[in-house]
Length: 160
Image (cartoon, rainbow, N blue to C red; front, side, top):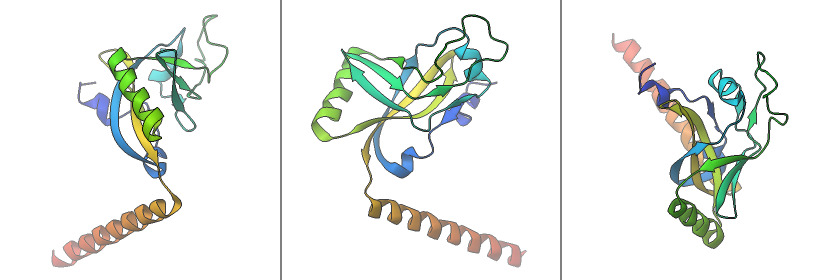
């Protein structure tokens, strides 16, 4: 697997994040995993559906990310698959995120999990919640783009 392949195919991705939030900026964070969680993560047995990040005591944690226990695991398998996992960031990055979250009403949303240079990384986005009419507008825009692409494909087939 080449270096470019890692970013093309994330191990877990939060597809609802772009639907529910305006993502202002994203930051890459390392993850502290225990036991056989990394093996289970490499097999793609993780979900970010309800996951969120918080900052406590100057440290960032990822909550509700589900990593299924490894089947061929040993006694070092974690007991709780949705435990809070510590994220590794520089203090300046944490303070910057904390300021935005407290002051502007932003939320820390995990966007995707992937392996980079042998280490598990999580892309955390600074997102502001969308209102219902924003979601409808985004859906309508996506549908119109899909219709335009379909019409262009049909025209190309006819011209051949």
